[in-house]
Amino acid sequence: MRAWLLRLHRWLGLSTAGFLLLAGLSGSLLVFQQEIDAALNPQWLRVPLRPATQAPLDPLLLRERVLQAHPEAQLPWLPLQVRPGEAQRFWLAPRPGVAHLAMDEVFVDPWNGEILGARHWGHFDQGWRAGLMPFVYRLHESLALGEWGKLALGMVAMLWSLDCLVGAWLTLPPRGPRRLVRWAPAWRLRWREAGWHKRLFDFHRAGGLWPWALLFVLAWSSVSFNLDAAYSPLMQRLFAHQPGPQRPSSAADSPELGWAAALALARQHAADAARDRGFRIEQEVELSRRPGTDLYQLRLLTDRDLNQRRGATRLWLDARSGAPLGLFLPRGAAAGDTVSSWLINLHLGTVGGRPYQLLLLLLGLAVAGLSASGVYLWWRKRRARQLRQGPAPWGSAA
Image 1 (cartoon, one colour):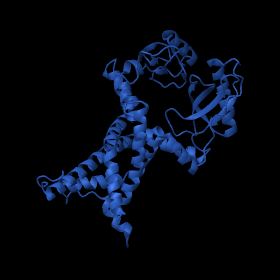
Image 2 (cartoon, one colour):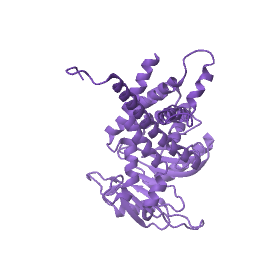
Image 3 (tube, one colour):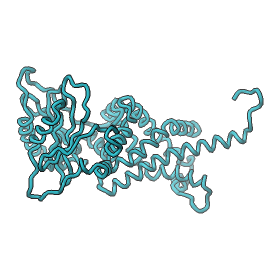
């Protein structure tokens, strides 16, 4: 059994090492994505600090200005959250009949309405500063290969999750008396009394044990991001979940709500839901309506959120009648959603503030180091075995 699991761990590690090396290094950068991007492109992402008494402009007014500047585009997302010193971002989508947008992210000063600039997100056609962090995100999310890359990383995440379990089991000593006591050496690093090879082996073994729980969180949450067809069915079997939005009941020929009316109704429904369900709204984040859908979604930051930056509380309403169609609370409403919220936010580094962000940065480097060290240890052991066996006889099969 142990020999079989050892071979499984070896081949799981070898088959995922390159992907995890890339994911670990890119993920370490993404922990501070906003800060790095703003440092590289302050002309777009930074605005002067205003007095607390100066209110930002109406987001609907900003939306109209962006649409006037980009008539070839539509705006399915209306940002509502304003932070001191930060520009407002508007994400563009092509209008029907428009095949491609030269720019799809627009930056606006929310206090005076000035359009600061725009970029083609994830590309380098405006220089490396504009494209670096969005490209790193695309690399981490999908190898910059779109849906095929996302599927490949989802499969890698599944194998990584399995390998976490197998690797931890292999560190356990054989069954017998005082098994936990005999497990202690697996957690130690022999720095003084060991050579370089043993130190590397100890790093690979102990370096996977100490942060094991967080490594498994990263692995399984990666499955949720990239391979939901595998993640959701299993989680729904294990835990209860909240239902999604109801289907709109309005007639297809009913007039549609404009963005101003939809925002006013969404705010009213959100206040009613907060009173009835006992949660507190801290900030409005975004109103959206994806092209081709018949519902608006209001995203909120509430006291039920773990995501300390954007929030994930969501309220849906009928795009024609304005009737509420459902509410999603990230925690406290259903065990499965609470578990998934913890997994996702631990992966994204949106809990725990700066200390956890620094830990996550180190964890990304550890993932890269564990992958690289595992490949090296395998290669060195294989090379030593080949040297012991000597060259193959002349005429024999390789």
